[in-house]
Every structure is written in structure tokens, then in C-alpha cells.
Length: 404
Image (cartoon, rainbow, N blue to C red; front, side, top):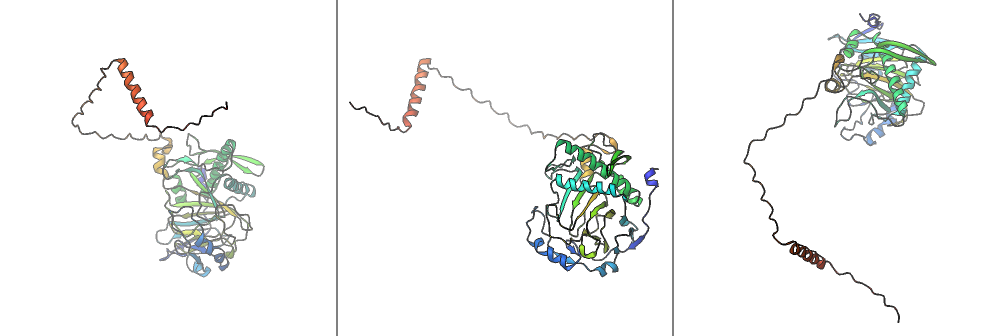
């Protein structure tokens, strides 16, 4: 048995919850924890220019009622660890683990990786508040899908790209190794049994485990463990309306690395699972795992609305989200590699259609050779050239006469 998995520590509290007939908050709404927050965001949600015009505008705000959360799935306070299970299917709905890293130096390094990534890279979530960037593998542009290492750098040198690849992969590995010790086994298996690569430092070997480096202040520590999921979204004050996703696996795992304000309800930025009416108060060093196929989202923050840039106000919240997009298994099988280190499948050549036999085309008749003597041919060409010149309009000439 894997020594890391043998040390699994289950959260101290298990809560059985019932799926709601109607999600709370409702689908496609922007949840607000207070009237003050709703007032700040309502106008810009209706009037802002959309970056992707293919997507419909989501402008509806919804003021949540704390009592309705308490009457449904409940509210997880900032110092509580909990696992939620569906009382009918018994499957894991969500997991909350506080003080996952439990080391200020390492947590500060993980948070610094978010700040650096948001500075280096272009925003990939342009229609959501805040700033979000992708690290690890990506499926490329829509018109040319292929499994590649994420780029979209704004300002960075070649040495900086290499350093980011090493540190981001190491950070993802450390988060995942700490998380898998605390998560139920079914959540761990949901990630590790998928036919996709890990965040493997963009290596040609595509190894599933190995060494990585962790920073604790000025100290560097070499560790060995499994590598993390292939993609991570790093967010700065990121929020999204009530929605659900169709990733390869059911679960998404996130870690909040920094929150500058208290976990008070009115500050916003709290996660919720709308399908069960659960709200989870946000705090630094908190791990969340949730079934992304259920409706979920984040309440808007008590701050001036920001899109596509890094906010510098009093409200600061950052973190990681580890996931496996639904395009990865197919692209991995035919592109960058195959599962278990096997060779990638070769693409099949296209079959050419055989044309039905038809009548043979007649050969073009040979050009008739001129029987004229060379002198006559030259004279004919000269006459044709003269005729072309004669058709051109005559230019007026001015002659200057000298005085006698």
C-alpha cells in the first residue's frame, strides 16, 4: 500500500445532506452576502462589455439569506473541518479541511506562486471578476485542440519560464500530497485513476511520481511523492456565478492561500454548494474538495468590482484549484502521450476516395509551327509592337527655343 495513503486522516465531522428540489442560490445568479455587496456589483454586471460574445450575459444578482443555508445543508465556520455526504447515494458531496499546510513559510511560498503567475501570465477567465491564470497542461485553442504546456506569458524570460515550470509543478505536487492524506479515498481515486498525465514538470518521461522542491522561507526541502493533477487555475479575487462543470473526474480540489479580511459573512468571497444549500466560510490555508457536477459558486466580494486586473484594495483573496478538464483523456491518447508511460497512438492516415473510371481525356492538339521565314516573323513582331504603340495617347512635348 502507498505509505501516503495509509496515513489518511479523515475530517472530524461527517454531515449527511439532502439534495434540494431547487438549488439555493439559483443557477446563473451572482450570490451576494449583503445588500452593500449587491449595490456595488449590480450595475457593472448589467453594463460591462463581454470578452467572449459567444457566451450569454449573466447579470442577475441574488441576496442570500443565512437562515436558508442553516435550514438546508448548513454553514461551515472558518475553523471547522467537515465532510458532506449525500444521504441517499452516500457519495461525497464536499470536503473542508482547515490548516492543511499548517506551515506559514510554505503557505507563503504557495501564495507567492499565485501572485507571480498572475503577474507573468495573461488572464484566461476574462468574463469572471478578478484574475485567473492556467498552469500545467492545457488543451490549446478551440480551433486546434492538442495537449500542450500552458503558455500565455506577458512578461517573462526563457529562464523565467523554466523557473515557473519547476516551481509551479513542485507547488502542485506538495498541495496534492498534503491533500490526499486528508481526503476520502474515493476523491483521491477520482483523480489518480484517470488516463491523463500529471503536472510532471513538462517532462518527456511523463512520470507519475518523483522528487520535487518545497520552499519554507529561505530553506529548500527536497521531497518525494506523487505529482499533482495536470492543470491548476490560480486565482486572485476570483469569483463566478452559480454553475456546474463537466470535467473528466467528478471532483475539483482547491486551496485558499491568502485572505486579507476576516471570514465575516458581509465580506463575501465565500464558497457554496447550491445543490445542497451549503455555505463554506473562506479562510487562509483551507482545502475544499467538491463535486463540480453539482451547482456551486462563490459569493461576490465586498470590494470595488475588478475585471482582468489584479486588485490592490483592502480585500485580497488568492488560491489554487486543481482539476482535469474533460478534453484531456482523448487528447492524451492521440497526442502528447498515453497512459502508464506507453507510446502515444499514431494518427491514422486519411483514406483517399477512389475516383470512378471515366472517358479518357483527349490530348490537346499540338500548336501549329509558323512556316514563315525568320525575317518575315521578325517583321510581323515589329509590326504588332508598332500597332500597340500607336494606340497609346501621344504625350505633349514642350520645346524650349533659344533666343537668337
